[in-house]
Length: 113
Image (cartoon, rainbow, N blue to C red):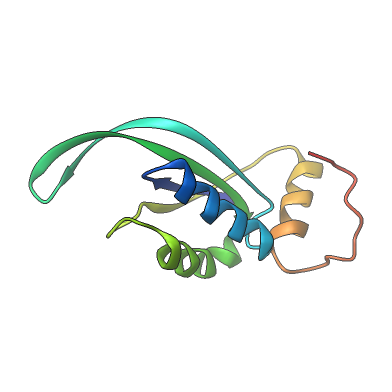
């Protein structure tokens, strides 16, 4: 199953470090990053702040490895790391699979981003 791993980071520097490592290790085909405003409860206080959300496009078989890598690089005590299954255009999904599953990497990429 292909999906999005949703992660939030406290700043662009940490988000970019995580994204680059995920793509470099072929744990993700692509990572989108964008600013978000968050309201959440932490240690019995209501907090509000700006974060960077990451949408990590990957194969579900890589979730545990992604989780370990993110925890090793993340600045948060308890980072948000969620997997959301996705459906979409088949050629694009094939590209995500080839570039994140660790399988069939000899196949040429037809799609360029």
